[in-house]
Amino acid sequence: MSDKIKFEIEFVIQSSPQMLYQYLATPSGLSEWFADDVNSRGEMFSFIWDGSEEEAKMLKRKSDEFIKFAWEESEDDSYFEMKIIVDEITKDVSLFITDFADEDEVDEAKMLWENQVGDLKQVLGSK
View 1: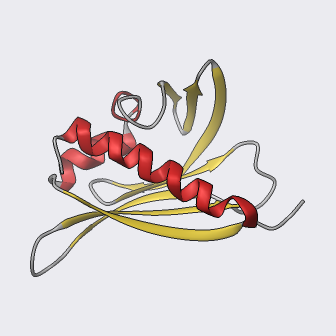
View 2: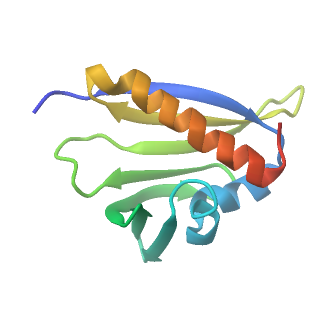
């Protein structure tokens, strides 16, 4: 098993942190942009894409700030985290993504996040 590479990407989102958080931390919000369908039972979230299901455990969350998941299938310490950052001066809201991918898949993983966050921006009416 190869070690995964940690990567981070940031997106400016025109939304309040409270509204954005609802799309990051609730099954109904996540199913609007991240997966075809999302279900949760306590800390366990089921993400469904094209009929295939992936389980993730919610590791941590802080309301209106961040949520962190780990895929059940992963055999390492990798996780994905979605953090909301508000610039103190401009009050601009950013979504900061931390994720892991195999070395030869980092660019592909970043493109996937760019597409997913593009969908999120559409749902939010953000540019």
